[in-house]
Amino acid sequence: MTIRGVSVAVAVSDRAKAARWYVRTLGFRILENEPEHWTTVGDRSGRFRLHLCEVGGRPGRKPPRSEVGNTGILLVTDAPFRATCARLRRAGVRFSMPPRKTPWGWAAKFLDPDGNEFWLNPAD
Image (tube, rainbow, N blue to C red):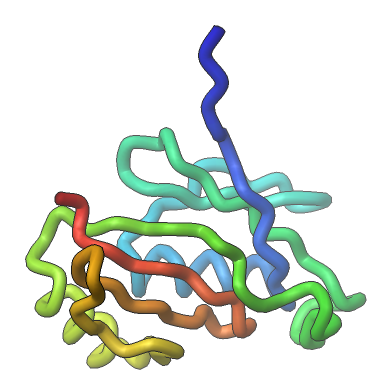
């Protein structure tokens, strides 16, 4: 039996705004957009999806603090790691942990506009 992840819910204050950020900043694409409930974005393969879960009432309101934070979601890049981090920084991405060499390799953590935190590592 094989079990694989399909999507992960991420709390956002405005699904449309969040989707634009993930598309423009991380290069994801919109995979599904059901106006009444969900928007999913993911990598170009379509195998990895983030379910943008609008919380906090109406669009534009910040999600409750308990809803956002360290997601534990790891993203990887095939491009040169430090160059990718520099490009993200130029695009306005806030790093909660700037790129650094760790005992297990290069790593960084960054925040989306709602304060959700993601790990970023080189793919290799």
